[in-house]
Amino acid sequence: MNKSVIIEDETLVAPVVVEDVATNAATSAVVAGPAYVVLAGISFSHFLNDTMQSLIASVYPILKESYSLDYTQIGLITLAFQFTASLLQPVIGHMTDRKAQPFSLALGMGFTFFGLLLLSVAARYPIILVAAALVGLGSAVFHPESARIARLASGGRFGFAQSVFQLGGSFGTSMGPVLAALIVVPFGQPSIAWFSSIAFLAIVILWRIGVWYRPQITTKKSTVVERHPDAPDQRRVKIALLVLVALLFSKQLYVSSLSSYYIFYLIDKFGVSTQGAQFYLFIFLAANAVGAFFGGPLGDRFGRKYIIWLSILGALPFTLALPYAGLYASAVLTICIGLIISSATSSIIVFAQELMPHRFGMISGVFFGVAFGIGGLGAAVLGKLADHTSIEFVYQVCAYLPAIGLLAVFLPKLPRHAR
Image (cartoon, rainbow, N blue to C red; front, side):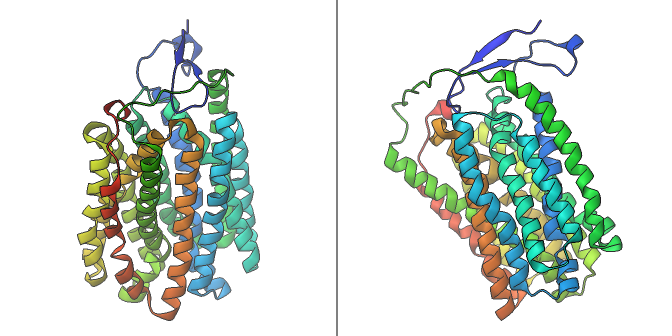
């Protein structure tokens, strides 16, 4: 028999009643700690979601050749995708702070489904932009509420749960180039429609997670969480949030520069084939996924501020060396960069959530949406810069982005219970 447990999760506006639901009614049991089945499900859904999203950047060479696009237009595709997600995620997060929407995840995946179908048949540049925007809309709906579910299923291990959630997304992002190399490059743009089946699978899984999530929610009067005496004041909280946005921006812009233009960099500088360059991109993105997974538990263990320091600044020597390295040395350097720079993601997001626990959905939306969207805007600017200079020059400029990690000195020390 399942036993209802009241969890006073300070990240939610209202208290939440959580029943430990097993995958099989016959094996239902009270389980202490994280709800691993739910974490696995939401992480796998994140994997499917980001696999489909990463296809957009992976097919850039095909779109560039087919429609004679320049780098500025390539950057605008990235902007169309990320701007939609950026604009809507904080709004959706604010709405779910007021009233959780357990089946919104399945609905949001429907936008991704239609976006992929439209991209597979798009014959004009404006239609490509609309398709990218639809996939971005799916991302906007998916991330805030799925991050809430991951935290609800964390059993108090917030960094670990965020890392498991991020792991699915990071590996999904890394799979895009491989699938593009194996399927889209040989069979062309229409083959993108095949990936709509992945979206359908994600809709089914997310609907099932919504069924689990719905009974966890109860409507109660909002409770005022007492401020810890050692917690930072409102002024320091605002400064800290701005610093965290800047740190995530620097990280995301560098990752976005590699995701959007690394293929072209390898083709232009080393004469690598499109398929070969996509596999090199996969190596970087896979390292990114591994780093994202380990960053959260390390933050739980040693403190998130230290992991943020190490992650952003630690990547600087490798990013500075990348523009001057040979092909194989570049692959090694991108592995180091991916492992180190991505380890900050979970710590940055959880740190921000702990600064404003009463605005969990909105904060998740801001950091998944606005900061990532700013990275998309930066990618468009980098495309313009590449058109006027060269891809190699872009990477020489981007090499200094991790130096923004010095701003971490302005982050406050959180009370011990918040870690």
